[in-house]
Length: 435
Image 1 (cartoon, rainbow, N blue to C red):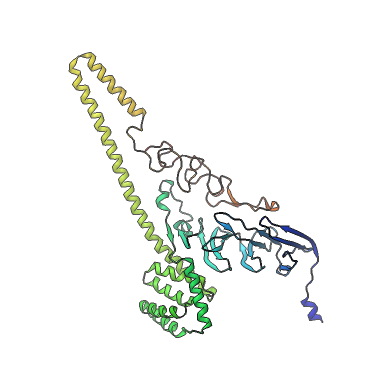
Image 2: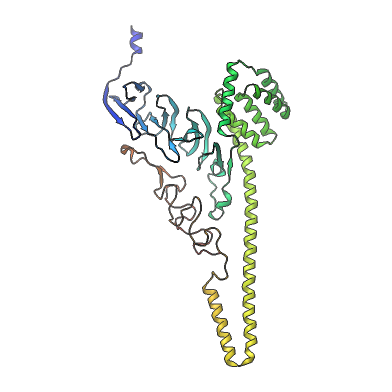
């Protein structure tokens, strides 16, 4: 009896609050006398029980738009909502409760959750709660577009303390699409599931491949691992083949294989960590190629600009020489003619100096209007386009936590445009419109 009594846990409930959300979802938030929260669906069935110990449960409704949101419950063990996780509508915890912020998005290619750690590192979980991108990207989260992932050199943590000069921002930002479409990831998972159902074994091939890899025969190991993947696409086979590709400096192939590891259900935490460490190195190597290509383009761009400036100065010098020649020729026709020619020359020179637009090159960055212009710029307003000058990016919708704000990672809370420092002027021409 004592054992049975110990297994029964009873709660005294202090309040029930029935909620009808903006998307029509109906549920009940129940709070115990010990401030433990639980959630019930419209029929009164408990979907998030008090036994889990959450002190904060909030429903996030479906919002339709260009990038719709996912309906879910945000949960936390702390009433202050310091660290949150995600439960789906069935009450299953699919995102662990140790992230500073989590946002769910719904698109044609993939429904996913974007997570942010306490030190502003971004990662991605899929709708089933499977981590598909490790939280290690700073500043700009990975982008999902047309069924593929895209990362940039600004997302790598090493770039965090290396600010980019505003005049070179267009050349310094490099993006890199991830080769595998999302549908290919899930296709491999389906193949793995079928292999399990048919009891297909590839242990012997894996052991032979790992022995070849340890012996430094990476090319031969790749062939063995390829045979193993065709029969059964396991995370272990993809990890070792990606590792061999990395050793043979085939960065792109290494990236493709190592990302498959995150999508396969048989991946252990140990394999995930190892795969991510090598994947980071492969990302960096592949990104460095694009950065070097951008550096060469920038060099050519500046050389052409310098050549254009030299041609403009030569044209100005030639115009000045012609004016002097006209003045000396007209001096033989009397004092009046000479005076008139000199006066004309002086007026032309004054006009040249007063109107720089005549003999100056137009600014190619702002298009001659002098405003801070570009995809992520302020377009003359001087305020940060991420947070609209507020200094924070996310404000919880509940009035209870209205003061809980997250500092904007783009402007670091200043609210000013990071390209023009709040002036609203083009950083290349300083607002003049000309170089």
